[in-house]
Image (cartoon, rainbow, N blue to C red; front, side, top):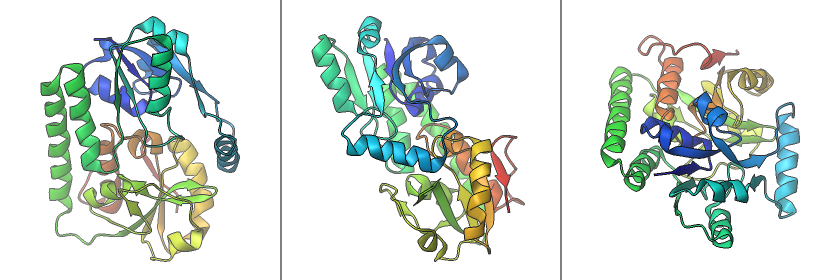
Length: 294
């Protein structure tokens, strides 16, 4: 089995299933585990947005999409040279990765035969189902079942620790300029952590909104989890978000590591959020995960 992953979350799933040796191709954004990008062939490239502000990134993305241009480049010759048996891609978000249709068109053009699996979860339950789907296609269904069972045990442990406690109202800011509220599986993470998501779109795409709409429900806690940023970048942005929520506790979270990528580390994210909402019941995670700003 030779596997190519065209999105970072799929790379994390592959390693969690013990299939790192079978992974032969990744994207330029696959940074977890670090060996993925260092040791594998990069078959998808894109613009390095480090050094750009959130507003600059937003303008760049919207401009490319308006012009009908792709945000990512598939290195087709490199892909063909890897002779993959299984390619993991998505149709969930054009901003996050190449859509599966682009991959299938490239394979047809190259004359390559590979099984293409599109991972498109919108809820936390559906994220866990993608682990089973990858395990089934990769021939390790028992490993996938064990991975899901382990995740469910950890989620159940958080639920037990937070049961019967008040559930703080939580607003999640997924992007800051312009502001986007929580969508997809993120509201599920808040509920699993013992909170009540507000100004959110569970199971739906996150959309651009306004600070007034995000603040209207009166959140007690605001979590800043920008896509594409780890804790340091999230903390910098959270400091600018805080004035919009003068009555709330504002926290930054490692968005890429714990919240926005639909992979196994979402359970780490639930535990980290639970530690924010219920610090006397759930242990604080390790350094680099969360930071209170206000």
